[in-house]
Amino acid sequence: MSDNWWVDYKQNRRIEELQGDVQAAYSYAASRSRALQSRLSQVQGTLERRLDRLAKSFDAFVELSDVRLEMAMFDREADVRNRTRRLLNGLAQGAGDPPPLDVDDCPGYWLKPAADGLAALIRGDDETAEKFTAEAIALDEDRTTLFLTLGLATAGRYVDAVPWLSRSLPSLGTTVTAVQRQLWIACADGAFGAPGAAHIERRLTEVIDEMPGEAADLERERWRQAVDGKADGRKGRARLPRELQNIPALTEPSVMAGRLANLRRKVEEALQPVDAKPAADFVSLLITLVDEGAPEERELMARARELRDIIETGGAQQPPAWDAPAGETLELLRGDLFSRSAPGPRALAARVGARWLRSIAEGLAERASVAPPKAVDVRLYGHPLRVGVDGAPALPEAQASIDEAATISPTGERLGMAVAIAGVVVLVLTIVAGVPAAAVVGAVGILVGAGIWIKLRLDRSRAREEAEHNKERLARQTETITDALKNCHTVHNNLRKTVEADRQAIVTVLT
Image (cartoon, rainbow, N blue to C red; front, side, top):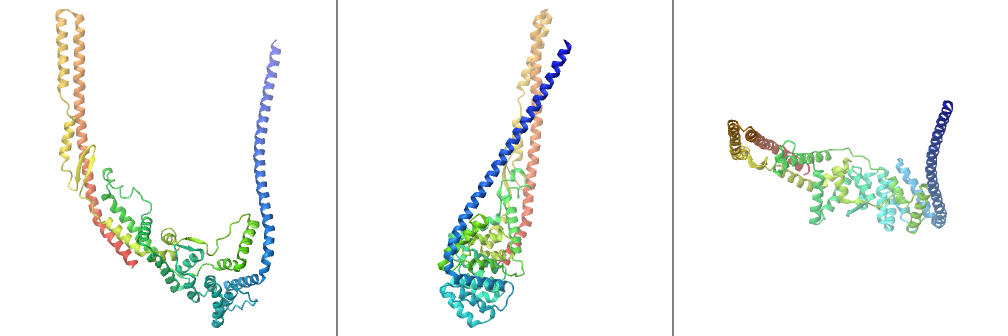
């Protein structure tokens, strides 16, 4: 009997172990299956994307072949562009005597005479340069003047480029193009010398001068907000008692003084002398201008660039054109001073926006110079008080009201004492009369009366102690506020000198 039981037990244990192994194998298989399914979905998604890209690339390749067939009619224009690219690359590498393009005439295409005019300008052949540049300007003045400006800058002839700069960077509008922004930065960096810096400053000043009054006020407010930055509610408050932290007349002067000091530091840093540096690389911008093509083929050239981008990168995002919008003029100007750190544009923004910066500095100085009040109305622990640098005249009345509120009438104590005495009398009488059962009434009266008397006496004692504590606390906080007000006046006397120095420094450096 016992042997059969042992055999059954061993078989059951073995069956349980096998079931556990099977369950573990099932769980492992299920996890592997899920992982394989996830991986398979990723592979399928990747394959679908690749197939979709291949299909788009193939379609783009087919269309590009058709576009190239149409562009084959413009072989002379293509030859002009190829020769011009070689010219520009040579100028970027320091070539000082470039030959003419030596290509057939290309009627109606501004690039051929513009490139020959640029080469002549570099060689110093003024007569030939005047002939070709006049021909190119007659075909397309905007592109020609821009090409000559950028080409001369690429060759390092910044002084020679200044006369063309004034024509390629005319009066600015509410927005500027990519090439105007790049010329703006180059002029601000001093690449075109003092004439270039004066030119861009004049153009930006014209934008501000021509603004309507309301628009100018709105822009000045944006500059003020940029000066203020993100408001920090802790500034000017940490050194004050809690009751004074929400009184602007006490907190505002130090905050305004801090903003004025920051403005002075920013303006002085912006107007630090910096070494002029060469303009940014204009070659890529010039190539973009050149690759536009002649007027008749411009749409085909643009479509060919889009198709090549689809084939090479799978997308149709082209780099911005030279005449694409680069941003709003005033927003870029404001950002140069407050958001970006390039020294040339930052100094230019400070000079152009000097009228607003001086006005903002005057406003900050005026608000920082307002003397703090000599007395303030506060509420201390539920008591309205007027506290000044000489203390709180109404403090005794407030303390008297505390005493009055804490006063507890002794009537309750007397009543309790009377009840206790009555209980004693009843107890004595019941003992004398030999009625022990009635003694319980007397004992209860004694206990109740004594309890009432003790409780009310303790309450009155605690009320007196609490009143004394509240009076002392009120006096201490009043003294703290008085000291804080005195300190505010002391700090303000010193602050006014610093504020005036900062204001005068800003006005002087921006004049």
